[in-house]
Image (cartoon, helix red, strand yellow):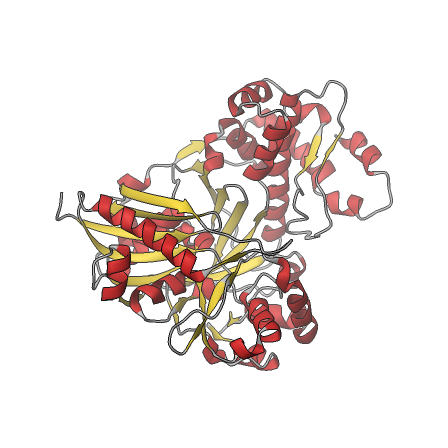
Length: 512
């Protein structure tokens, strides 16, 4: 219906720029996407060029709005984006240089210098996260060190979703979830950390005013409307960090419900009523963010850098075998993969034992280890390691107990993986059909900011049909017993073994 109200959103991600328009029942009526244009100027470096990236945003939005016209009129808009990356803006609103990608290695030295200057414990007690070269502060320090004359012109640092909103409206604001990825947010007082920034001689006014996700930012001005196809005067609201705002569409942004988001990487997000400053979180490399809607929720985060990525890596090493054939062969095998164990540290160690020098491994391979056995051990190793992360979180005082686990993402299409995960966790999984959680969540925030919905809760109720129903995957009792034995004898004490001088191979053979 041409006059029906729609909501639109953009997901400015590491791999792609994607936009959707949805009706008020939560159904996607139009969508558009293209790869995020990324440059690698030298080994270990990655960056985006602002004007090139803005043109990608414009093309995606033009394609989206052209298709959406047949379905209705866009009434609200918000953006979700990658964290940590951002851009320096001068007094006239002009971008001063390239956008350093969140994973770019050029800032490692600046991150280490910041760690020495602040002390990791101090930074953690202030911002709720350890110092890191990936966070915005290290990128700001890199600009100041390497381009002091350019940095002297900077008036704002804008995170990626904030930058899109700024280009659309001319207003600079940032939400708390993206502010959490700067290393500069005072997590206790929910304001910019003046004292921490003072130690680094950084003016807090470099950062945009803080607002809640879903709060109004401004309206699309004439020039941006002409470039993007969005209606002039369209309300634009604050979105947020992609992983964190995904809890909105998944309905997990309250304590007791763990979100297990399974993509190339796997993110585990657990909401809490208060920030946690237990030193075990710092030592475990856990992340912490805040999502402010009707009230602040503090999101504890951990996960695997390679989850679906590890599965795809193995498939390629197996000669490009189809997922279907690998799953069929693996499904016929008993739990435990005949004693073969897989360590998923393909990109270094993850929480709670972060170690950039850690490496993955198959341990216990025999002449009978077929591709199906190896494949099943990959699935099992991924699930057993995430249980290690969850047990670490659950043992920390004041962390909300996990009552339910909700799973989203591409990994949910692998029914064998879901059954293994439920059995490893020893509890039922709530598996959702959500495939575009970030875009759907940002659209909901756009609707709230525009007044289409009074609250996120109301939006979820109205959109229940489009967001889809969960299905329950129960653990297999015999599998659960085998995996519990494997977890307690192999994976739970794993860090002690790897840190010792013992023969790890012999140790695994005794227990697997």
